[in-house]
Image 1 (cartoon, rainbow, N blue to C red):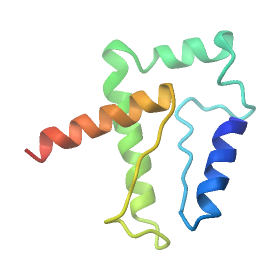
Image 2 (cartoon, rainbow, N blue to C red):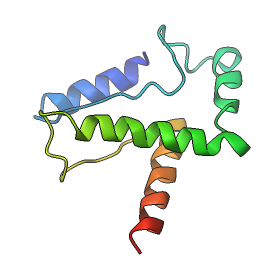
Image 3 (tube, rainbow, N blue to C red):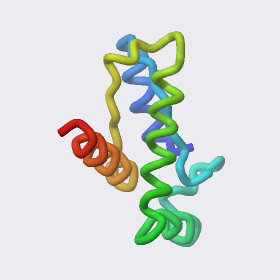
Length: 99
């Protein structure tokens, strides 16, 4: 996995937060920043595949919410770059369902 994400997760965890890193690309070796590796995988989530990204992000959030270690009323999403897109998509979807 991405070393930066692991570092950020550790920083949050040491402050008492429960952290889930949702690997939406299937990146077991930290290749997510390599264009030749990640390009084709990210394309799955663009255009018509965007709902797949939204669904998988919501599913990861749901798994976290169901953990006995977590107060489901106090969840947060954090994302950078591609993960930021996933977070924004979920937040937009939630805003539409709560209006």
